Amino acid sequence: MQPAIGVIGGSGLYQIEALTDTQEFNVETPFGAPSDVIFGGKLGGRQVYFLPRHGRGHRILPHELPHQANIWALRSLGVRWIICITAVGSLQERYHPRHIVLPDQFFDRTSQIHTFFGGGIVGHVAFADPISSKLRNLLFTTASDLGMPIHNGGTYVNMDGPQFSTRAESETNRKLGFDVIGMTNLAEAKLAREAEIALATVAMITDFDCWKTDEDPVTSDAVVAHLHANAETAKQLLTSVIPKIPAEPSWPEHRALDSALITPRNLWPSDTKDKLRPLLERFL
Image (cartoon, rainbow, N blue to C red; front, side):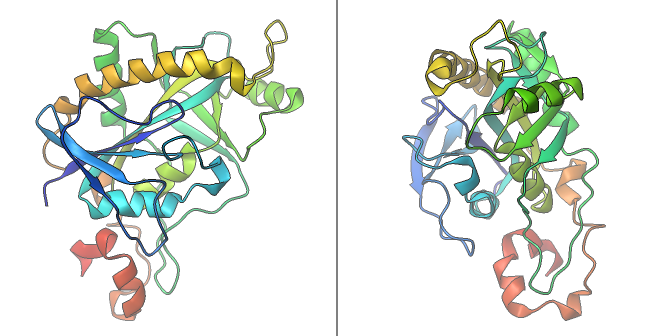
């Protein structure tokens, strides 16, 4: 299967018009249905699969997202790199609406657990550096060449939602030095690492959360114009960066399970092996 590139589209990005030879894929997974059909096609000579995170029409709340199904489905189609486009709030003065931040770290404020393992197979992936540095730097140089307002590195704090932050929460996150805040991306990064997919995040600023008292606190209505502008920027960046991604998966993330699997293979239950076959196939 040809190594492919996945794109998970966030708020405001529900399709990529530059895709050609498109097909729709309804992927059945052991973890239920993905957020939506997956759109496959060609972009810059590469096979690309696009998944709208919240479904077309934005129908799924952050805590309702079927993250396991989404990542399993993409991996089953041969995806080895994922670019996540995600809307975030800024926690620092220097990040303005319509700027891009490429996080290199996460801080988890959720109450959720996200893993493919269990059911008789134990795995603990290394996650000290949760973002693919090679993919992140490729995004940075491409966006810089395009003249986009972009910042390389930073910490994405992941909250549960669906409500936005209180002022006390927002101010605390800001004083702790976190850079942007969102509700969705950490789960994708964790599961992509378990699936041996190199992932990077394009965090697109829509607002200042609510810590900035000389600005109106964030509301859904207030961010719509920024969402549309950010979506067009994201499409331009994707069109430019995708042809630059290597053809063969040879980055460290592509062998993340080499030192992660604890349970001896002769003890793996057959039903769990079947369930995780797209992830474990090179070990079987």
